Image (cartoon, rainbow, N blue to C red):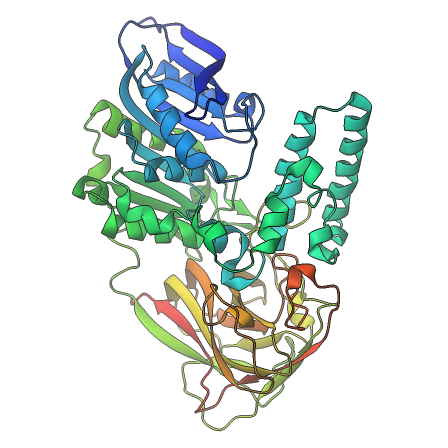
Length: 580
């Protein structure tokens, strides 16, 4: 059978409700019948999108539309991240569905910010939108992206802002080539400095090179720095409270070492339970691999999870096509008959299907911190066990923001030269005296944890504000200490991120540290390990311990931290254990 020719149209104009023109590339087969549409709205350049997927999808009978979002590349307007994706998303979906070659059915796909553009469009309920395929993405810009646990996700903000926001803004500036060349040189210097780590130490943060210049980037960085609480600025961009209004099926794709692992699973669970229609609730699926924010391969940081983990690198096209063939073309391919949850279980390195998230058979078990008062570093006496504590001395360390605990792997984005993501040996971090290390005895049998992980910590400090960070680690028989998941809480936001509440120095306070979610089997002979510290830099900004707003602060003061783990203050790790 002869394949139809593929028509490629570039810079096709769509006029938004305010008169601004956004431009798209279109790929479609030269056939007389009207086609279902696959739409992607991207700030990263429509010409650099996955052209092979676009062409192959067109060969399968889809019209594919890839649009530059407002103020980016070929599209008019001013780019302000996230703000305009709602109205523009609605208008573009309806424009695409109403083209002469379209049959009125539109599906959307893509990852990260491009996943957010799907959720933003879906939240406005355009009639032509039938299904979406959000990958490694989020719906709450504040909590998922920039201020998790109340701490600024500095690594994400700076690396994404410089690598995407500033670079694009410079290209669009109406200035002479000589001036543009000088700005590009300044950007190259900033990226080099970021790769060496120095740029993250800029104080105050409001003076961050290039990002703080409103003549280049407008006001996004300045606005983020001035809205440290979860206020109306963030609420306008927050889709999560609107998930119950969304009535489209969604196939969620995420990774255990992706910065948005928790968001992917939260959005799936919320949609599965609260979506606006029974069709949408039944039409939710999720797949979680051991992946980074990208690419989808078995090599994750310095750990290789095997060839099975790389399957999606080959099958992601096919998975998308099956999803859209079912919803847009009505092809009964059995995709909805398959279990809704598919997870990669690390440690055993196998895929497994499940019926729900979190798993109904989960047993949430407390695993307690113990020591003789010297849990500092890998060589200390910290113990992790399921036995409750009785009378025990406290552990103490000094958190000095001038010498923060360095980030080593984890769920990170977006510049691997500066902040490499994934699984890494943590022993170098655990050599530090300002890291408390609690390690279990070798396990007698395999122990699977699959689900959300938390730490309940009883701590005191001599500061009026500080941070507490935690990390769950899988220690192999040879001693290799692989990070599994991690989190942080800023003390001033321990009661919620809408309003700060400073501490009373010396008072023992209960903190809950959300470590996100994972699926990992700690194999027999391995040990569980929990790290407690007060920094994870530059993943998160440094708390100056002064009580003043960190982004505008230049003074850094050391804080004396005390961790309690006795009968009255049983600090513990909450493990989602899956029974054998």
